[in-house]
Length: 283
Length: 333
Ligand SMILES: Nc1ncnc2c1ncn2[C@@H]1O[C@H](COP(=O)(O)OP(=O)(O)OP(=O)(O)O)[C@@H](O)[C@H]1O
Ligand SMILES: [Mg+2]
Image (tube, rainbow over all chains, first blue to last red; front, side):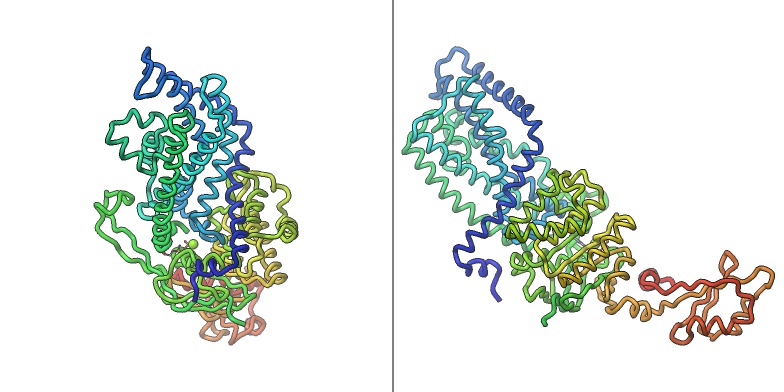
């Protein structure tokens, strides 16, 4: 008797791609949710604007009268942190929230009762979330950054294309990294509590969202530049502010692809084991 | 025709942490004393034909929900084999899911923060339903389940009964061939229950949907299921039509007799006129409850034997599944 995934492979390619349309069912949820709470969006903008403003004020204070720190001018560092805030819109993942909550409350079995692959469903959910937040969060932040904080924006085609490419890869990396943490819920049951802090430290701080790698100690720079974390904020933002050229940007994209392949393999391995361990609570 | 659901020697164990008193159960295995095995289900074998409506009965913790999870591929069996629509639920989960519907009454599959109708739209994509097909089935369910009043309401604002109707629509949109319902009437009032029962009979009759249903309301099962499976501590202890189950477990009808107040009737006067296997019980309201064996004695025969006593009125209480349930699981009569 064939395995489900074997049967999947035996289908003609056209049918297989048509199967991907199923995941739109997951991707549209965050978009619909966004629509239903559109009236509360302006409050969110104001909050994130104030936050960005404070970050910039912090860097202004750090710089004082110094012209340059670690190779960054004040103008560059301002653009850097604000671009990081814009990128926040894309770097969202719902896997941890959905999966760890799902395992604890037993709702994960409902996702297993759908004719979809769980990892792809989680990915679709995250993609819908990112798509929504580009409009609800990214663009307002971009406008505020340019008009109020005097952020620099890459308008030449090459850096622009590179930023988009690296941003996309960063999104994919985050889904897999977040997904791996999320899958740990099948073993530990409980992954909450520390989560927020750990997420913040790992993804934002070590990803290079508030402080460029150039400010980190040398050994950490070397380590981080090779890790998948550099693909989250550091690379796309460096291209954004003009600190990374096309060649270095492409090399970074290559490293991202390598990590994507590695992480996908790990996730596939973990997924199979998680499915064997499914215990559903309650009921 | 092959069986819609077939389980053979089905068993499932759970590992549960034995935690020292005072240690926290969720703090990892550190201070725990080790694991204990719990047999949630042992050696369960049954087969359900396409189009059958079967009630799955058992007290709390008997293993009903566990069985449903095993049949739908969510949990792996520790032993035994399962076939649903000739598929192996665990190995061919995705393919099976497209053809079955599963409802867990205490868990919502609807998306909480968005209007009910949006959950249906999402399911349309997830099950890859054609536009026309979806429109037709949704129209039908809207009518049968009377959903129109709250289609645009966010799910979190629905009442329990409304939500349950929404849940039922959600599991039927893709026209499943087999339906697993785990306590679908939980928290639903009498009117709502009646509507749900009629709805289930309807889809069973019109679409030939096979239904496996668990409920703690025995009325649910008695009124719609032609067959019940009785589960006790993870083992199957009975399988057959509800009436046969009540007979098999020796549950008997009761005739309650009211005598006129002036003609004092002694219990032994009644006893003398009846066969020895009838039991008599004097009730607080002065009436006499006679439990008899319908096979040996019909109610008219019984009454005619007592014809010379001053009977004012009588009432017949049929043996119900609820009585059987109490007798089997409660240890009482
Ligand atoms: N995840 C789990 N871990 C450990 N034990 C479990 C787990 N799930 C169920 N059990 C045990 O398995 C047994 C059967 O549980 P199940 O939920 O199938 O009962 P049920 O018949 O559905 O009961 P109810 O009528 O209360 O819903 C119970 O003893 C329960 O404690
Ligand atoms: Mg249950």
